[in-house]
Length: 315
Image 1 (cartoon, rainbow, N blue to C red):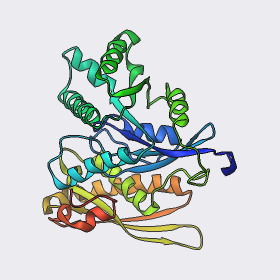
Image 2: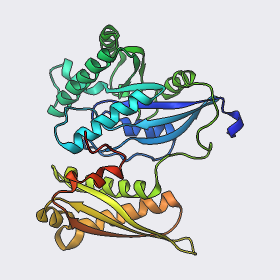
Image 3: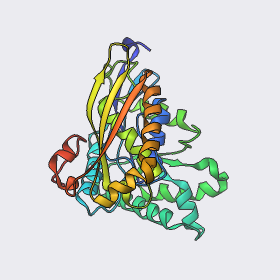
């Protein structure tokens, strides 16, 4: 596609509860990885913007942090950024995990699914208060026969918060073409905002840090992944095309540092190898990645920890 082929352009915010599949959907729409994905909730900490096209429209897909009852400063900043992304968008897609709702209706919901449904209900209440109707996308419908999904559609129609309802699977792409066609029609007329061959609006240094944080979240357990952050401190491009990256893994406690390092350094070695390989594929070059673990008990209370992520400290 050429820039002159684009006659519409706008922002599409994807909102929803933590772990509803927003980052998976963003990556599926864009066609490449622009947002990190793990099985843990609250993986996305700041709005990630991917660029996609449908018909003559350019869609800037905004993958927002999960919306939930936040108490800590970092969590509050994440939730506020999600609603801000929705307020600024030309179209909003509320993504709901249909599996959680079906399990809840059957009385078989796991604790995480019950929490997801509660968070969805909070989102619906807020949408009703604003008076703005958004698009509902029921995710993971490929896991169930239609007769189990139809009662959900009826329920959400009655809520009065949605202009349209789509059944999709972010994982395998079912229903995405219809959703994108509908969203593209809502984009305002105007030229492309980004070059057609650009897939994301995120600094590479930040994306590299996020990829390393993804590997840490996959490797570590319990609460520790939420008590750390990753910052790219140096980035050096060599004449032969190689890239040297130094990153700091910042944790809040000394015992967290030992957990990140692992016995004989095995954990940090695994993380470094996995991140280096993915970055190499992403950049299409050899990457030399060096990770250092630092302890900063108050990193979550420092303004600079938020500014580089584009989050508001005073949330």
